[in-house]
Amino acid sequence: MIVHALIVDDNEETRNTLSSILEDKGYSVETVENGKKAINFCKKVSFDVALIDVILPDIKGTDLLCKLKEIQPKMVKIIITGYPSIENAAESVNEKAEGYIIKPFNPEKLLEMIEKLIVDKQNEYFRMFSEVERAKANTPIFRYQNPEKW
Image (cartoon, rainbow, N blue to C red; front, side, top):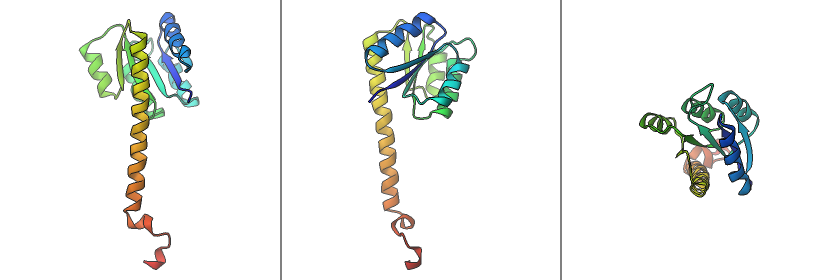
């Protein structure tokens, strides 16, 4: 399975570094330098993971999390920051970021985190579908195909 990744960072060197790390592992990568482009891209293309800088020129990374969650709820969202603080870490968690990475980052640990989060997200959806199927099997309205025979 090819993993599709979006990198949102205003620093070109960071975008290139992250892109190289992910592409070397076989990921399909797109990069953008601001939140507006990220939003527009996510409306057109489906991504498995997004790496989002917390400080962007046009929007806070944590605000972008909210917007991307609405557009692509199954996408794993990871905040990346060179300016860690309790405030932006708490805000990231409150906005449902699945990960939080501080620059400079260890490439191996970054890849481990991404892979684990993607598997966790997939498992979450498999569990959800299983629960829905189980609920259907235990709910009379779904068990009977012909309501006239009730």
